[in-house]
Image (cartoon, rainbow, N blue to C red; front, side, top):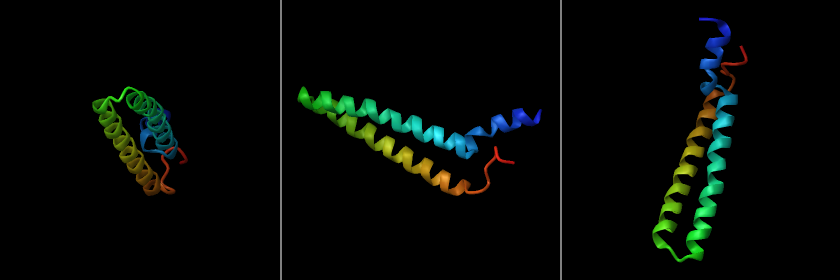
Length: 80
């Protein structure tokens, strides 16, 4: 396996990969906010609960990714 390929496989465990995961997870919050706004305007309790659960999942995911980012520290795969 080449050195470039092994670096690419370690991308998820790198700071760059973690930042990308944080950004894509946070982007999901936009659709959840739209869903919650629509549910409120239609007085749809079930969709509002679904939006709240989805928001909780996003917050939990961001917290896990942030913790992973803190653990990486200087052990970045792509830097060396």
